[in-house]
Length: 495
Image (cartoon, rainbow, N blue to C red):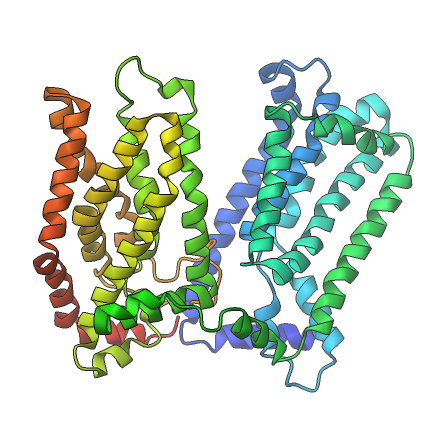
């Protein structure tokens, strides 16, 4: 049965109209994975030297053993954002006369075949050979590395269960942030040293095989947890029912006051919260609101007078991150139903205006959410206000205009991490207007007069763009209308 399922997967790939493109992408990703894993192996080989010479550790094993828990907390974080779920694949098999258990075992097993599975063996295997084996013996080295690997692999099954149960929910995000605080904040705030508390667990494996047996039991238990959850929810109606109930009737009612554009803005909002990829972009925009804590609290960026010029970019980033992230794929979000807007009278104009309206609303919310940064100085609040006006009047039109260069289709139900559907060269160039345009206005006035005059100049330029919104937005509308048939044709291509 496993061979038959593998055969079906191969036929699906080979019969696809985009087989050549998919094959090239797979080859490139495989090459990239090999390169990254080679770097991980290289780091594993020199890990002992890094601990002893760079961190000036007197006991490399003790230092690493005390910090392993932080590595696993970090692994929990990067698995949450990068590990793929096999659930969507179930929909293609559940109607077939195949045992549900066999399908789930196959999908779970296939998910285990991943570069993420090899990171811990490649990173800590050489360290076990160079440090643990000479000091504690071969049995202790095998027991130690086995317990470390089984801990990492147990996180794989735990994450399959966790993401399927809590992904895109407030509880899931709350747990992830709690893990981040637990890992990064405990030592920084001086609460406790989590590594020293759990270090005896890993040291125990040097003298007894019992930790390995315990972790093997945890590994099997986590697999059973994932298997039982997928098994109990492996019904076609269950794969969509919860999603539909969770996001039913979610709309921003006040947008309806803006006519057809407002109605389309409401549709766009529903698109965002009902589909996985745009919803991830929205949550990342909220997460990046904390970006200022990296710079505003760092003494390195403090100045005796005024503020650091870098803060202008930080303010632009915080107040315009959603516009930049979501706007870079301006029409690709609607690739599945773009023809619907073409068939309606003034549908394209209303679609474009609705997106503009949504960008403004979310950017206003980002500005309001950033007001607490005034705690670090009123200069920060002035920067955010000036950056907001500049984003709304200037950067927004530049981002939209660039995003209309050969838009590509995408599947909204796929994850955002390592998913490059809809992304072209224009999307990689999108950061340029965000970085260069504010400084093109700010720096001349800041250097000649003062920093605050530079902020005023930015705000005035943004207000001028807001006043000229209609003619500027019509340029984007006109570009879409002139290329609507070419865009529509590209959206009909198979992803």
